[in-house]
Image (cartoon, rainbow, N blue to C red; front, side, top):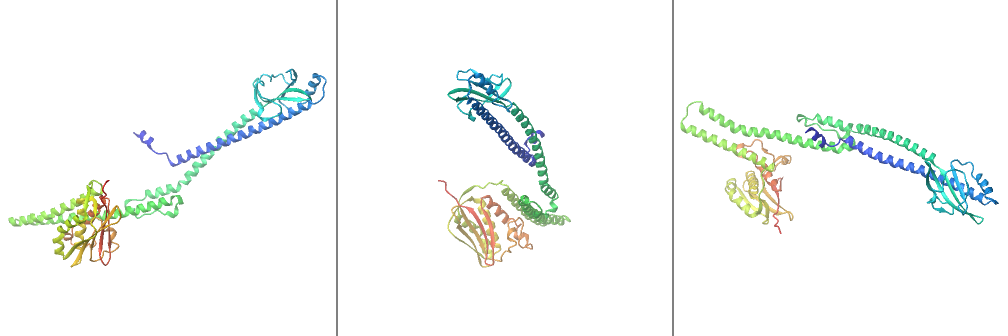
Length: 470
C-alpha cells in the first residue's frame, strides 16, 4: 500500500527543476560539442585540401619542365615535394605506367573508384583506408605539353584523427564536470530560492483555530509569492468570518434549544413537587406539548437547511405561473395580513418560472410572512414580477417600514440572526425563515438579495425562466 502511495506522489519542485535543467544542459552541451567537433574537423579538411592543392601544383610545375627520359622526370619528381610529412603521391603516364611514387603503399587499388578530376576540387577528395592507416586522397588528370598524366596524391590524417579523438574525450569530460557543477549550482539556487516558501510554511503551521486573526505580510515575500499570500489572507478572512458565524450559530442554537427544554423541565418539576389535580397535569402536558412542537419545528428546519445546502434535496423543476403562485400565497396569508393591518398586492407581467413548486412557495411564504410582520400599519406588501433577460426573471417582495441598517444586510440570511436581538423569540420564530428561503432559492439555481432604504425594504429573487424544449 505504501509503495503504491509513493508511486502516486508527484515529483518535488526541486527535482522537477533539476530534471529540466539537466535536460537543457545536456542538449545545449551536446549541441556545443557537436559544433566544436564539426568546426575542428572542417578546419582539418580545409588544411588537408590546401596541402593537397600545393602538392598537385608542385607536381604540375615539375611536369612542365623538359625531360628527355622518364628517369629524369622521376628524379625531378622525387625532389618536387619537400618539407611535407605524411604526404604520398603516385604519377603515371597515359598508359598507366608508373613514373614515380614516393611510397610502397598501393594507392591504385583504393583510387579506382575515385572520380578523376582535371583540376583540383574539394568535392573529389576521398577518404582511403590502407594498412590500418587513414588518408585523404585525390585523383587528378593533368595534361602538360600535350602529355596526359594521372596523379594520385594522399595525406595521412591519423594524427588529425588521434587529436580529434583525444580532444573529444577531453571535451566530454569537461562538459560532464561542467554539467555536475551547473546542477549543483541549480540545486543550491533552488534551495535558497525556496527559503521564502519554507518561511511561509512555518508561519502557516503556527495558525490555529484560536489564532484566526493572524495574517501573512505580503510585503516581505518575493513578488512571485505575493498573489499566493494575498489569496491565503483572503481565505483566512473567509474562514475567520465562517468560524465567527459558526460560533454565533452554536450559541444561538444552544439558546434556542435550552429555552423550551428549561420550560419543560421547570414546569414538570414544579408540578411533581406535590400532588396535583388532573386538570393541572393536563395543563402541564399541553404546555410541554407546545414546547416540544416548537423544538420539532426548529430541528426539522435545521435539517432541511442542512440537506438543501449539501445537495441532499434535489428540486423537481416544473413550469410555474407566477400569478397563480402569488394568488395561492395571498389566499393563505390574507387573514394574517388583515390582522396586521396590511394590504397585499401584486404587480408586473405574468411569467413562467422553472423551479420546484414546493421550494418556491416555501421561500415566498417566508419572505411574505417576514414582510407582513415588519410592515407599518395601513401599508401595502407588494410582490413584483419582472423579466430580466431571456433566461432570468426577478420576483421582489416589497414592504414599507423601518429601514434595515446597512451593516446588518450581509448577515440577514444567516441562521438565527435577528436585527433586533431583544425581540420575543416565541412571537418572532427561531430566525430561520430567511436562511431557509435562501437555501431553497439557491437549490433552484437562483439567488436572493435584500435592499433597504427609508422608503421600503425589497427582497429580490432572481430565478430561471422556463424555456420550452424545441
